[in-house]
Length: 134
Image 1: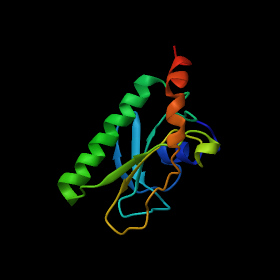
Image 2 (image 1 turned 90 degrees about the vertical axis):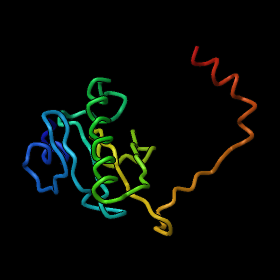
Image 3 (image 1 turned 180 degrees about the horizontal axis):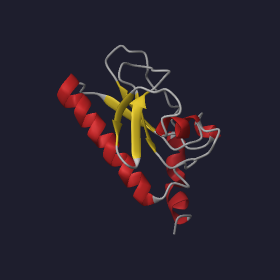
Image 4 (image 1 turned 60 degrees about the vertical axis):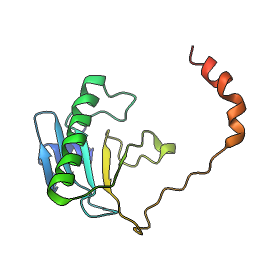
């Protein structure tokens, strides 16, 4: 646990949250700044800054809870459209530096659309880009 991390405090019960689900390794709670009803955050209880330093076995545990909560919202609430979002790093718009995933229920006309600028001209570089991974 990092002493100044709000998500560590939430996982330990030292800060208020609206718990959706908890097990030994993962904690899920409603986002205090929701963009939709049932906007939920899922975190590992252990502190990891982002996806790059989170061990694979911890990510598997977190993603299992993401699936559990998504299924719960679908079966109990009839939510059929969600976005699952993770931002890792400041330039990726991560604002709390404790690994977390958002489940954001979506509906038509909610004005929460993500608009990306696409670059079709980069297709000519695909072979070169992939060669850098070899």
